Image 1 (cartoon, rainbow, N blue to C red):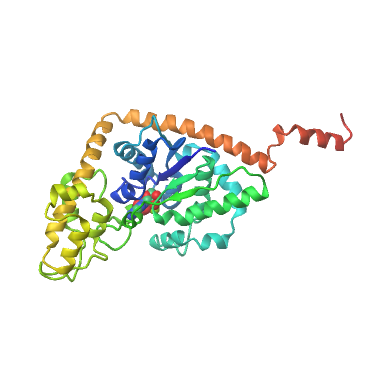
Image 2 (image 1 turned 180 degrees about the vertical axis):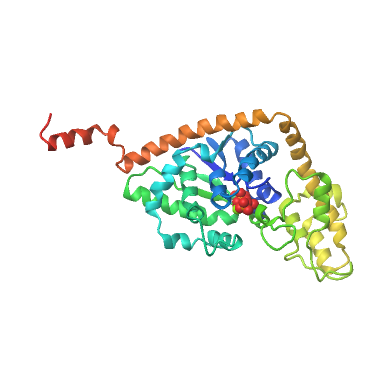
Length: 362
Ligand code: ATP
Ligand code: MG
């Protein structure tokens, strides 16, 4: 069996550097590694509508933003299938059948959904579609028989839910579905990058983001505004690394060559941290360094975006072609699912023959 990637993002805004370190950067590496037979990248508009159903225009307008962010990061439509979730109706059908395999209490235990319900003030009136989105996500993953799902750690409960559905389906019906593995970023800071406020995960819904498409000046201003260590008042004061957003970002983004280029007095990040902890290293200096690191990473992405922005109809074409390819794959899986669930009546000659015999005909 081949190795297949499926992952995606909700078109609720432009993509930010949390997406980049949590998943996007990895996807591009995997796409180019040659180790995967197929890579499917989905813009999850149907999922976005589960909590933005009153704002369809927002979802609709953000499709192109996410697509441009994908292309500018190096996702390549000749190597990866980029598609739009709502255009694959098979995913709804799969979701409907998987609903039989999941209990309400199991969904209520999902820690990510719990946190998201709280964040959206949905406690009193949770839309059923939102409550059940982990099931729809299982449909997205299994429709493509994905083996590998590169995600941030907020998605682990979704992958676990998918694995349970797969095991249950395969044991009741037939060995049709594939159990996926989550692929987390290899460094802790990237698993759940905090927002520039330092408090919660960087998230479009919280407005604490550095966007991949932010201008050079926007990025600089956001970095200079970043939350650091409230106890580090004078440069000479000892500072804290833990919970210090600038250091978390340096963990996620800095490479040894950045030190050689912008901070030659330090051998690497550990030495910089030691100095900060001891005292004598000011916030402005570390922020300037982080700004240089981020600008170096984001400048080529920004430049590629500007190129793709010149031909928007071509970007829609990429998504349309990708959606056609994705639909075919999902339709094959759905046919196998329906056969396993014994709802393939008209393809089942044995059933028709048996029922005819029962009534003494033929
Ligand atoms: P929304 O607020 O609409 O949920 P979001 O910013 O949380 O948006 P999603 O589209 O839900 O973004 O997430 C897409 C992918 O990016 C997922 O794999 C998720 O794990 C990852 N991701 C999102 N935010 C972060 C973050 N701050 N750090 C690491 N990974 C992240
Ligand atoms: Mg999210």
